[in-house]
Image (cartoon, rainbow, N blue to C red):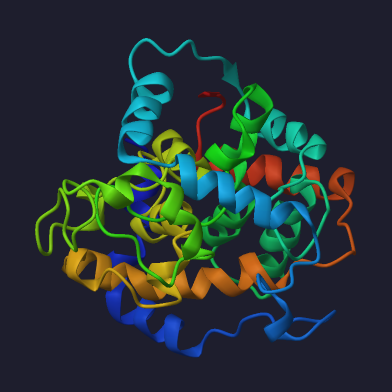
Amino acid sequence: MSDTKNESTPLENLDQWEEFLETATYPEPEHKKKDDYRNYDDPARDCVKEFYRLNHKYQTFDFVMKKHEEILGPNKVRKEMTVIQAIELLDTLVDDSDPDIELPQIQHLLQTSESIRTRGYEDWFVLTGLIHDLGKLLCLEGEPQWAVVGDTFPVGCQYSDKIVYPEFFEANPDADDSRYNTRLGVYKEGCGLRNVDMSWGHDEFMYRLVKDYLPDPALYMIRYHSFYAWHREGQYEYLLDDHDRAMLPWVKRFNPFDLYTKCPLAPVWSELKPYYEDLIAKYLPKTLMW
């Protein structure tokens, strides 16, 4: 366990961090109105709707368990790589689920982290912005995008109608399975999100890579930033525990940086790289086993 985690965890100074949450300012969209973001009624990119059709059809409880074994299990063949190497690989990936922008993912990471940094926030918060989507590297290892990106949701229980394109769940076999299609499904009331299996994707993968090194708010941002049915729509309250509720404001505070900083202006990685090399070295090991 990194010593940095103990030194920087916001919850050790709860009063100070509660004040921060109340007074912090967040980015306003500069290139279009807020209502134009996450427009799934008329997405700007034709691939978005087809992405969610596949995602909702195939993200079953059994599929998620299979991915946990294949990708998180002990038999996974892993490769050692620095965070910088991972970031630079994302220069080749465009997210098919994103209705807002069609830039390589490295630019989205930099837009998010730079927006956080220019507002003077804690450096672990900046780092979270930089790495939150790095799990999308799974797409470059042969995984289909519907199994890596997009909004996440609990599997093993009833699907909320507040999830993007809920009608596509009609093709998911779990929707007709009595083990999984009730309000609680395989879970218990108030079990906590740590005991809930989410649709498989980059969020959970990246969380597993860095869970020993960053403070809890950062880990919740990484693990649940795509869980819009929870942090935006207020769904699945019956699965939450008190710690989830304490962390929800952090996820909600992160969301505007993730969403509203998307724009056609691409940051210059070569100019920013030295700063981020130092920041990564402060919190994370030299290499991670991807």
